[in-house]
Image 1 (cartoon, rainbow, N blue to C red):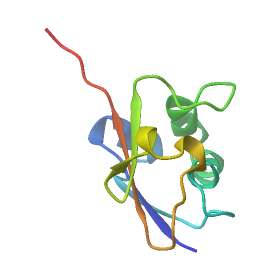
Image 2: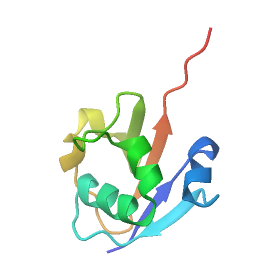
Image 3: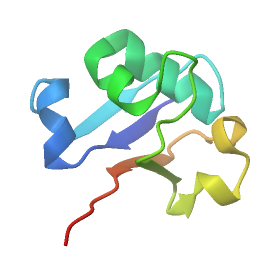
Length: 93
């Protein structure tokens, strides 16, 4: 199983400058994808999930364009060939 993870520039530095990562998770859920990402880039993994493993409040995740907050969260199915986008929230004033 192969999944592409797309990162914005602000997080790419934590993955050695890569904005596109190909991962082979051990399962077909978003949690498995994030575990594979954390194993490869632990600093990036900590920016996405907290110490308890929950997705941080200001990080948005999409599987094939669908917001996982409206799906099954970390249990969202991630099929072979899926694209996972990681987008931190942006605030300003």
